[in-house]
Image 1 (cartoon, rainbow, N blue to C red):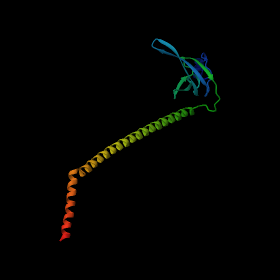
Image 2 (image 1 turned 120 degrees about the horizontal axis):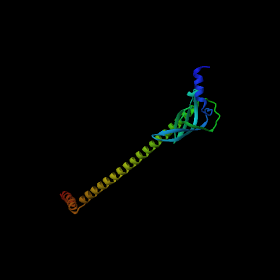
Image 3 (image 1 turned 135 degrees about the horizontal axis):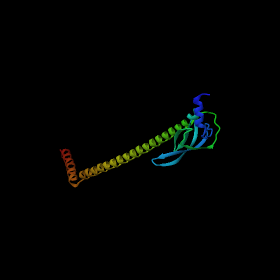
Image 4 (image 1 turned 90 degrees about the horizontal axis):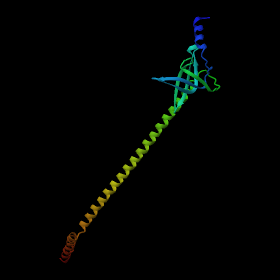
Length: 186
């Protein structure tokens, strides 16, 4: 037997790990040290793929967090991993479930398109409201100018029909018939 393989088997002999497959939903508990404190952090998700062999085996887990996909790659024989629990086994026909990433992208693109359409609709409503307000302001300004014109016309008519102008208008008319009467007499 190869010495390298023999050394690898000795290293992984003491560690008990379940046999993982793509499609499994697993919960991984890992020790995390922050300054002087240590705590356990769990990461639960779907196994996308298992790579490698021996102590260099890694597995990728994906989960959705508030609409965004989060992936994490764990070494299978990492001493910081305290427990790997298989929550659910699913039957899949692929060794690598990379298509799950695309569905998240599609949803993200759909969300972006929806937001863009909402923004366009809001802009359109805003433009329509501004146009309506502008038309109303123009109509009010036109009404005000029409009222001013009507007032000026009324004042002009009053000025034309004032008593001074009526006397002047009547006087020439009376004179004309007198002249025509004199012409007729002759």
